[in-house]
Amino acid sequence: MNNMTALNYVEKALTLAEKRYAEVKHLNSHSPLLQMYDSIVQQLIFLRDLIEGKEKDKAKLWKMTFGMYAAKEFDNSDELFFERLSDAWFIVDQIRRGLKVRLPHEVDANYKMKQHNLKMKYPGEF
Image (cartoon, rainbow, N blue to C red):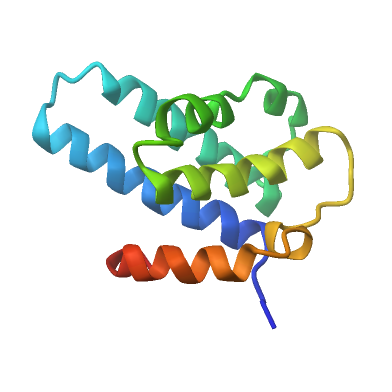
């Protein structure tokens, strides 16, 4: 049984986003990619706060771009980050449309296998 919540999915994405931001900053503190990673981190912080009830303005969800970054920047270059962002984006999309949130593991029959494969490829990230 999977006990993941929407908050867990967002926190996993946020933790990895903060890690990727720190890695890029360590390699080149003037990298133009820092702005993109910072934007992703800030959006995930807002989403976390919204889920926790600390933020109320759901209209800001329509301005979020991290789903676009996931698809355009990480689909082929950072499989794990792509999956984490995609899971969080799946939640954003439902919240902003006023739907009852269904979690990735609840709708994707292959979710457990995908996570197992990712864990084998990236054991330090789990």
